[in-house]
Each structure stands twice: as C-alpha cells, then as structure tokens.
Amino acid sequence: MTKKETNPYVTLICTRCEFFKEDDTELECAAFKVLKNMLRKGKITPEDITGEKI
Ligand code: SF4
Image (cartoon, rainbow, N blue to C red; front, side, top):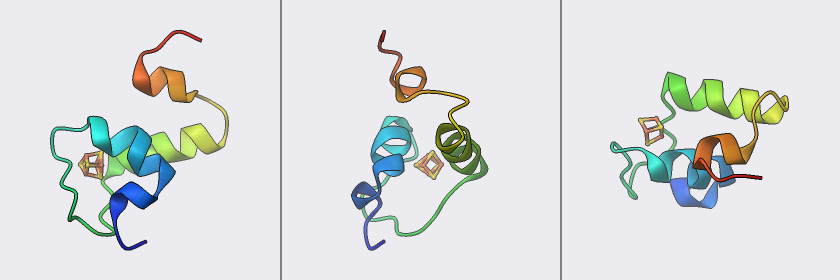
C-alpha cells in the first residue's frame, strides 16, 4: 500500500484517529491491528467503529 487511504481498514479506522497523517505509509499501531482483526473475524462491525446505527 502506498498511501493509507487506499486501504479500506485505514479509511474506516485511521481517518477517525487524531494521529492520522495522509502521508504515513505502512505504519499500523496495535489498536489498528486489533480492530482490523476483529472486523475480519466479524467480532465487531464497521458501525461499531463509526458509531452509526445499523
Ligand atoms: S495506525 Fe493507529 S495511530 Fe496511526 S492513524 Fe491508524 S489508528 Fe491512528
């Protein structure tokens, strides 16, 4: 991935993070990895990240 915003998990998780920088490449914090894995396994939904109601 060349830019974080090309990764859908980054779009969902990182763009809501106060530390997000558009020019960061390939840096993934522990919280990002945990949330990505929980999303992949279906333990949480994208709406759990966005706070939107289903
Ligand atoms: S990798 Fe972690 S610290 Fe960096 S923008 Fe994403 S959630 Fe925030």
